[in-house]
Image 1 (cartoon, one colour):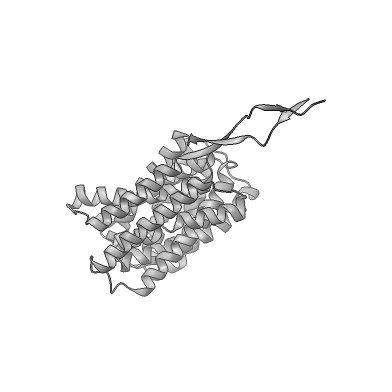
Image 2: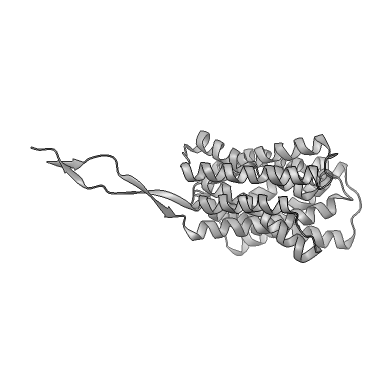
Length: 309
């Protein structure tokens, strides 16, 4: 009679390329969106910017929904997305406020705490247990965030940044992590087009009263920018929803760190901004963490051991 001497051992394997590429692409689109949001947030209130973002995103998401001939969601589908929209609204309002009051690099650095909360919520809600590579990757990425934040605060002249803005950025990281974990729980059940449509429609309804009360006139240029923000937001969330459908939330959360890399590239090529040494060191740690997180553990059979009749 034989049986395995122990539980199957684990060995490293690469994360599936599809979810990783989709997650990085989605984060890239949302990073570009953040820059455009900061542009309009300089002249309009946070509730108005959030309302315009979700109205534009909802319109584009509906076109995708209709083009794919997606069935209308039933009540059982609407209920969890309605609750999730409350978290999405909290994320949008706090993040947009932080964008309006803090330098973009500082907001992004603070938002990079979200993978830590994603791993925490994934364990509490989904029962996921991130392995050692993911934990080490999170630590590396967070150290990189601290380096970037120190550089911006001490060298970049952001020492007088609003305390409320910093608090808002941290709150948005927590609520964003929670929304991503809830997204993971729905991504395998609901059509992607439905997820993205409801992710825009419900927040627009919730924000509408505040947005309309704070409404100010907008130029044609700002309207075009808002349409672009809606398109980028819809495309980014379609990519993320697709990625979270087939991969653990705690693993994909680490790729949030790549948004700072996108920010460096966009700043350099679009605005001629040259990052400082602290920013480069921090980004290097962030990239290293993301690459480490691309390795996971899978089971492989052990030789059987004869234990006698």
